[in-house]
Image 1 (cartoon, helix red, strand yellow):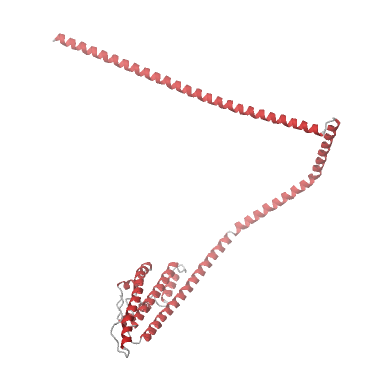
Image 2 (tube, one colour; image 1 turned 135 degrees about the vertical axis):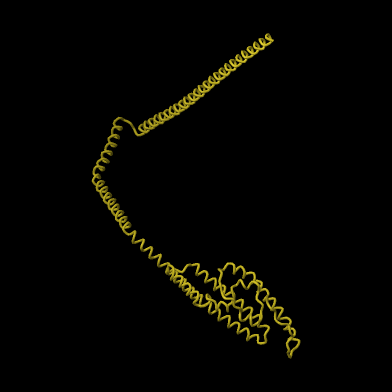
Length: 350
């Protein structure tokens, strides 16, 4: 996948140090880049499968072509490098925006969410490829003489592409905010229109509720006025009741019934009432029990009648079957006698 740096021994004034650095550095570099390549190789196919298909011109990466680095077999699934995307119709800062605007103007004026998702996927894809190209360029720089200069150029190129991607990301975010604001305004307009359409019904309901409230208030006022008018009568009734209680107490005092005697009389009366209620409850229970017994007897009698009818029907059926069997047997005997007579006549004739 990756081309490891050359292991040719450079010419240096410090041969031992140069030899050690030259032999050890490629091993660590190859191991680190091999791990990065393996992780990217695992994630790139899944990422490419999850993203929508993007058609781009087949262009090669300038840094990869200049360094002579061999591309991976699955690089074709990643839809080109950063340079190729920069020349593609959808990779420019305004290319996706113009296409989206054209689709939005041709349609209902709304940018569908799936278009935003596709553009976001493209930006994510470009970001991943930019990082990959930068890693490849840094790897290739270690095989050159001016390593820091080469890495700086690769970093500047990566930052340039990153700035373009950032610019498109900001534009996409602005369009998404505009689309969401437009949808929010449309929902608010629909809600206002619905509220205006329901305004007459709501006004009628409010008027009906207000009229019902006024009726309840008037009825309450009438009830209060009637109660106030009946207040003297209630006071007179209460006074008459108190007078009756006092008169009853005077009558008991005149009859010589003391308070303990009156309490005993009341207790005896309560006991009689309790006994009467107990007897009444017992009578009700006995009546219910007798009624249940009558129902059970009626059901038993009905079952006996059904059993007798079924037995009678079975007896009649058996008698009928016996009569049929007797008639059939008599018929068979007559047929046998006739056959015997015929046989005797035939023997006599012979």
